[in-house]
Length: 407
Image (tube, rainbow, N blue to C red; front, top):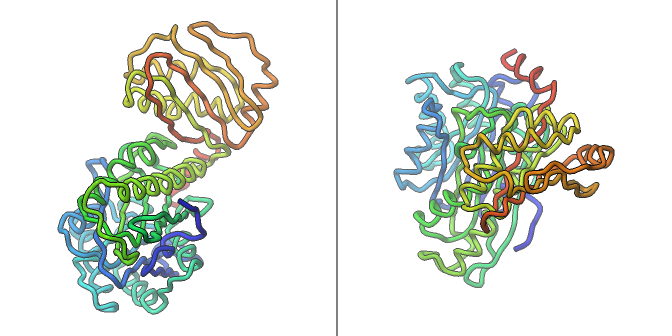
């Protein structure tokens, strides 16, 4: 597997476009389209929030219908959530605009929205945006990058990644883009994400791979404990790589799964590090836990604690905050088995050993925690399972951003 430059246009047959549709933002792109001339099999995972945006409900039907998918249209600024029938009608109107411009069935057009909840989408602007983008679709790397910028809201950087791997003697490409900075919590894959590949694979296996991969990637990130109404991760495969169709979990499937995990893990970490107001990526790694679920639960609890996040921001090696979060996580363990370390590029420092606090160099601890990526490493000494979770520090700017979000 090799990392390559690009995102959603890296794989054969995929094009992208973006435009200024003035949905809510001014003087910036706010709509994007990803398009494949060849029909795609699709897979998706969606928010676990009971309050689901109209676009989520639309895409769930698209994925479940087994209809070939040709396009995804995304807007930023307005979430199209809590909008009733009018919101669902906006999804249909957007899909039908794609059908009219690109001569593909509207039932195979997915839509996604991100932004303010409770506002109605301006349908005419959506339709105009589709018309503008239909004429500018391109398979260049730049077109994919521009699309990744257009879907941003409070994100400070765009997020895209691509890799190649071998399947059936063919070179296959997998690329993707995502957005997410706030309302990030591990209850699906809290964000918008779009993955494209030219792999030839059975739809059921595509879905199985996606559903499995998110457990240790997008489901292991948290910024603020809020699970969005709009979480959508779509994976499209058009088969243009020409490999023999994958219909069982063989070596080719394993290669694809590894590539999918790599892309999703990269995008997930990028989202966590770009949390609203964040200055640091905050990782928790738990090893030697009794079960995989214990490891996941403990790691998520550590990065999800507001006190832990504040300590990371303040470079305070107050290990009690992290142990406390582990203690209320719901996972049962013996605190007298636990070792806890702080790690970063600046070094590694043990601060707690089998139930006993250690004397440690506070100045060294501060140097470790001042780095842009900080890890709390926990050895449970109770089994063989491990997991990592990612979040960010909690800063004053997080409150400022969200206090002013609608304005």
